[in-house]
Image (cartoon, rainbow, N blue to C red; front, side, top):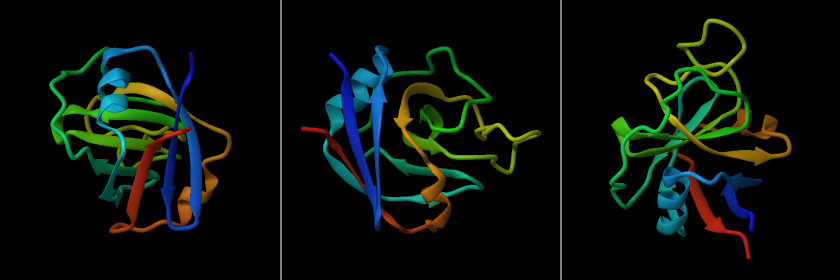
Length: 126
């Protein structure tokens, strides 16, 4: 059964599907929550309020637009929507390896309007 989450920040609403990994399970089990977001290039990231007891799973240092990543170094949930300051091409590159645990369904272009400090609300989709 697909696990769909809703991510809302300001007027932007996204849905994403989690994959079948321990990181996705751990994130799913922390929901719902809200946290202030930070922007780094075209990456939105925010701390997961509950400390996850997982390390990197197949850590990736290059991801795809729309990927959801867990950044163990910051216990953070990341949404990649374009190049970051570490990118060497158009693909997003996190500051250090992340575990990809899901993918945004649809377009992520609206995220380019957000700024650091925006509140991010993450819920299980009913």
